[in-house]
Length: 80
Image (cartoon, rainbow, N blue to C red; front, top):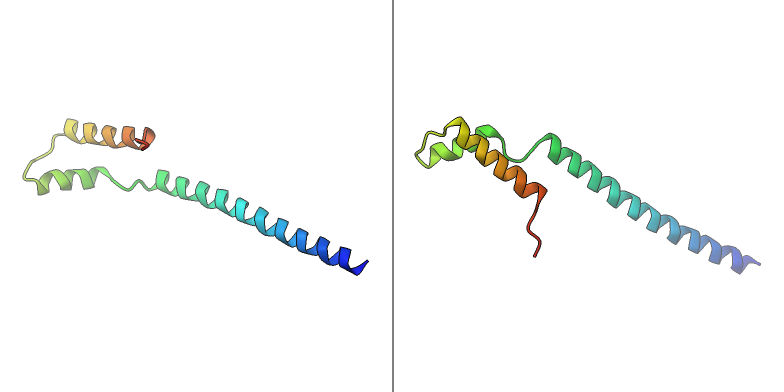
């Protein structure tokens, strides 16, 4: 009788561990995606600074084109 309780406890412990790992993975993934959406890694100021570092004065159209290209690349990643 005692062996059945121990086996049940071990299975419950393993089940809780696996459930926590799966839930933690999806929670971390959701929070990371939300943080990246709220704080994009590249801003307009960074693009303007990049153009200036290359010795060019960027027009607003060039900045918009570069931002759109970055957004499209993030939405449609190339998978290998």
